[in-house]
Image (cartoon, rainbow, N blue to C red; front, side):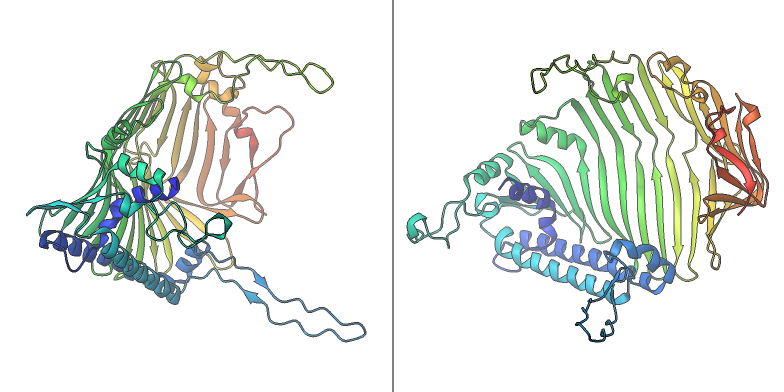
Length: 529
């Protein structure tokens, strides 16, 4: 029963997708019908915009594995009768991973039917005059009580023990569900911020906390989560939030209409996120994520026949005690006797806690992927880690730093070209230059087995020459440099530096003997096979 009630709570914001057509006051009816139209328009428009995907061989091949097909072939095995010739086996039946236009049409029809079924259910059970708690010229509030959320605790069609018929009349609802319903007090408050747009607030508890709002607008449909209200709701319900003592920020998942046959499915950090917690040792933990709208988006442009995916994570910061990153469990020092009375060895004593504070900063992650259904091309543009260096500090001392193309705008483009009967080539523009500073010497007394290069080194992977191109040779597990020169260098151990000219390959090797550099020594320059 608890799982069923939880489903009601999670689905509550979606229940405003449609509503009754008759026997309801004008305000509530108008809000619900507008919400229904906007949801149907968004869902069906998104599917229509993506119908072209199956027309592209490369796109269908890329998306096929997520369609659920196995791509396997199987046929019935017919045994041979003694002294008789074996019959020819039937043609095998193959499961195809390919996505077709018919598949999309079937899926779209399934969605339409599901929406229609939801409309019928809500008209008869959710948005009814009996559930309408209050309304005025600007809002309508529905209260979903136990009579809506809770099924009977008994099966009215089943006989009682001993074969006696079940009692006549409606059985009582499940008492646990009734208790949860009265605790959550689920309300849906519908308002209209502008003509043709509906906002639906999910209100929980007697204090009417609002952890989520569904925006059912003419140009977009969005589920918006308010983290401060989520924390307030959990506190009001008396739920244990563990070490978390503060939450703020808003997140949104939405379907956005740009134009006819042009829709986007996107996720956004609408306002900056902050999470505060306390470690077991009493030290504070602070997590911060900058706003980014959108953070990630998949855009389906049926007019241009393109699928574009973009990602733009804002700056991320974490301040926490170093001990937070210590893995493994501590022994408890208790001896347990083995069978036969033999005492078991005592477990290892608990490790000493790590001390100090880590301050990590990721400047961001961004980039765009475009799949062109017209000419089957794949391009990744503006890839990078934000507009600044990403760093890690220990008690104020810099111990790690990462930069990509610091002298070329900190971003790069990557073009992937499929060659006939060969592995694809990867071309970088203007170049690719990864720089990593490692300075973990101050942690060596607490963290065992740190590799030598991690104690103090500047590593670099970069190309000489403009628009360099490489080709991964999957059959022999080698990286071929097609144009430009690829370099792997170490400031601490320059003797280990590698330079791979055009026409040669970078290969991984096993070295049993000591090497000049633990990381670079795993690679070598070789002729391509």
